[in-house]
Length: 294
Image 1 (cartoon, rainbow, N blue to C red):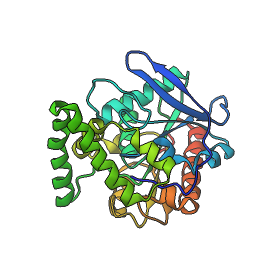
Image 2: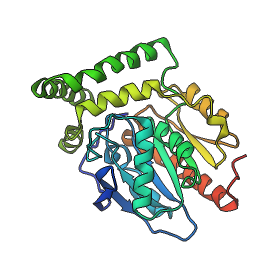
Image 3: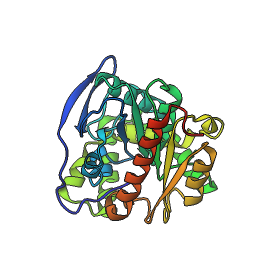
């Protein structure tokens, strides 16, 4: 998922947070904590940052009465840097560690694209924390076509190379990748600076991890209120696969955003209302009971 800002956006305040045994990350937080209300944990897509993914949504979510936190995944932006290989499961554990470091006991992961995979695993691995799910522009897996399997299969080999390639070669490869991204996206200097923070090795490992992920064997076990935001003109995660995800989850509600995979940042007038409706739906069902999804 990519994003392009037209100008320097408003961003909520943030601070460094130490995660015991994992390292330090940077967390944005806004909105008021309310007793009994879950916190929204915003989980961004591949190759972007929390700010690039969610900057149009921050203020509307807080204004709607949600308490919100957001941070970058391992190797993305200002996310964790350590010697561990990137994995979707690791990101789910990182997100749970952030929640616990902030003293949160009830959360709703809100995942976009790759972040939707992280959210699904966060429910599976940390059920004591997760009270609901909001899944946007995502699927049960990203290998639904032959082209997908070839693409993500190729990333598995590429992901191994940065671990043995000399430092200058890694830097050159990242510089070429960054140049192509900037040319394609037409990012402002702010957007380019966000992408320049990435760790190339972690990005390639993330792509391989996405290709290996599938929740189809267990997604029907989800027992918390869930909403899926379908991006109806999405060419990267086809709408049919998004709706298949929704139909696999008992009691899931579907909301539509009329746009492609970049609608969250390029057409926020289409995406943000759908996101707000999805989050409100999950919050209201959380209030009615812990198993109100089905």
